[in-house]
Length: 113
Length: 111
Image (cartoon, rainbow over all chains, first blue to last red; front, side, top):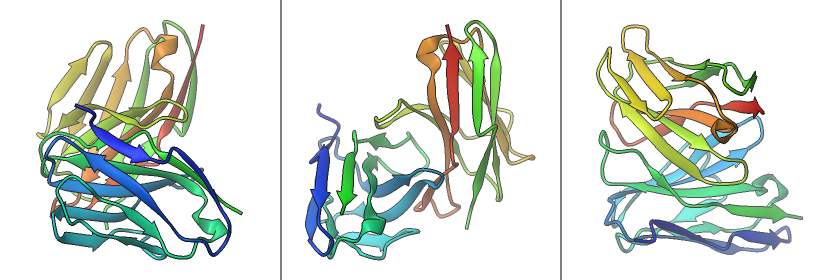
């Protein structure tokens, strides 16, 4: 099993560009989430999904879109990149709530210039 | 919304020393998770505590949950350089859909 796979690992964008961060899991997990990690701010939830076709906003959703057309994939779209979106992004998944913890991807380090 | 606080923010210990990291919740805990993050990498799940008074161990790491105090502690015995990293606690809100993290405790172990 590959677990949670995130691509790309590194990305540099210019302000105003758009891009999609990919996330795929092969564990048949229902729950998937996107977090961003910033120095001094910890991990903050951007969007999450409790199953295919269902998504909801987390703590910091502005500037990001998500969709969940399949159980396996949960891409995160940056519509118009801003320097404030420079961060490390983590995708995570788990079976359901209240059971095992989240399995995390290795992260995408994004720089917006 | 639920908030988690951790103390201390950072910790430097000599190899072989014991240490404790605390996590306190602003609301009732319905499950408390501990993770470790090595610098520049993703998070690794360590253990989950659900019941008040519950205690779990993994190698030299022991975690306890005090449900009444809405608090959990993570204790490392005879620390080693391999224990270095950032330790984060996480918890579900009472609906189980929003999962939040504490700010993390950065641990350095000097050989």
